[in-house]
Image (cartoon, rainbow, N blue to C red; front, side):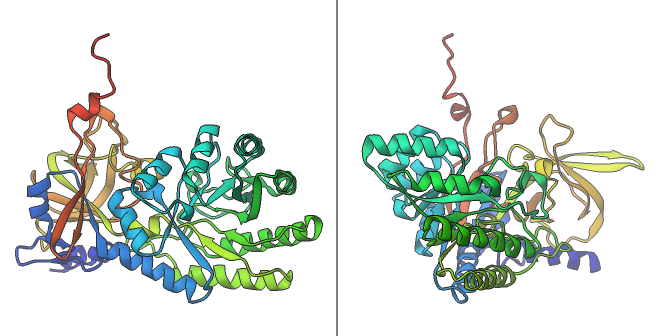
Length: 443
């Protein structure tokens, strides 16, 4: 009994309201996961609409109650889909894009482009002209070459870009090196020693209207202090620039990085603690430097969608190595869920078709791809698993689908959105025809 209770406890990291029905099946958004698998197959990604809306409302409440002039932009690299963009519009959330492709999808979905911000370290002239044509609201300038490109674009069109200057404040965010972006040794932003020249150069170009500054420290920042340190550095810089160049500081983007809890034992600070640190630090620093309070911009991605998404897999073959390890393979892996392989990120899992089954021992859950590192979970306590079981893994709403690929000619999975017992297919499963649509079979 104790073991089954522990498996049920893992639901705390699944979408809000996840429960177990009389058949001992996992239920998400009022939908029986076993029935979802019967209808849509596996691997299958399930997004719960109410959890996404709850995350959006929590962010708005925690930040805007402390700092009313807060704009929230969804960092859509976490997952970009028309259904999701509609939810963000409904929740009064703008968009953060990092490519021409993301811009084009947003526009095709009818997203208000004036609420779109475009950062990125290597924007092409084509992308910047695209941003101009679409009416993108903000360009985040990342380097000197980009200033030159914008100068060319605006000289030929007479268009003016509203921009933020991205600074690397040199703050250690205490996260995985692959998702740290605010330190000095980063491909993103101007180091402080170059930021003054960047701002001076940008303000001399008629087609650039510098509204403010931008920084982004990285993802999964589990200690609030780096935000405070970065804000102090950037506000000090803004005050010096105001005195030296008559720079009017109207906006500050602090990026994203708000963490989500990925395992039961690894706690993260609540959104309220991050919001309090960011807003209090900003107000205090501006008052100390006698600066006008700017609009605050935050760019969350993972925290809006991660918990809402669950990956469902069907278990297949088993392999027992006496005294070493027991393997169970599933029909997905690194091609749809690369985070354990890339970032060594952990998650929780349950058997969606046998939620009350007691634990049997530790297993290593392996993917089906031709890489020894294709392991989703290593030495993880689970009930006895047999071929045909349905494994549900938590926290899969962010980055899994955007980072998925066709390795080993894998067909990227279907995605459904669930609410109140209804499931809507928001992305169909790929077919072999999709895999070869760009190939030339006549050569």
